[in-house]
Image 1 (tube, helix red, strand yellow):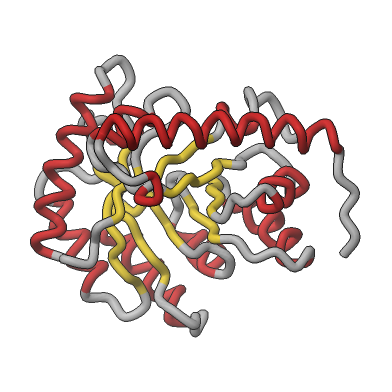
Image 2 (cartoon, helix red, strand yellow):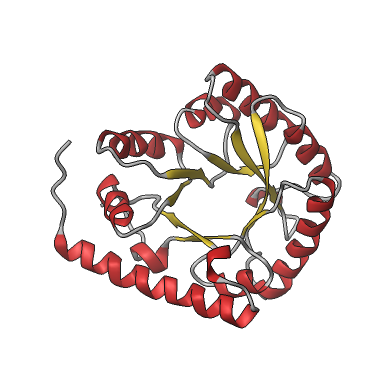
Length: 240
């Protein structure tokens, strides 16, 4: 599949990517962590497959999407171009989309209910995947159900269900800093929960936290993955 790229856009993405990588390196140095402990997930929602391919050419390996109807077609275009990436589904997921998401996603970061665990497990088993679908349990840091995430003891019920499933693998946790709160305080709470989860499930060490505005705070408190959109791709208006 022949791709025609905008060299101006490539230069823009390259410059943005360099700045983000430098921020990650500085944040890791300040936290006393090696930079290779932190994976950059480029959140490419609302942007076209051509941008994903440009980022892949610049060394990005992980991309995140939050709408199945956009992500499924975009992932197909990228595969048709012969490019293999690690796809993260990062948005709130309806159970009836589980089958579609299992067809392209490597990781679902937004699992927050037993019913969704069941739907994803069934879809993953039916898809006869080469390896289990990795799942991150989304933790609510503000208790607002509208923003997604488990609260209280639901964390243990959902994480145990994932760990005991046939088609899923418990990778760890994901969270979004609450609006209007110091992200450092929020991510410190997440770090405590992540430590408890790792005791119960030693393989569940992924912590996906931090976005364009708060990646430094997330890295300071142990994030292993940061989800970067605006700082990398620019302000979102509509599909470009």
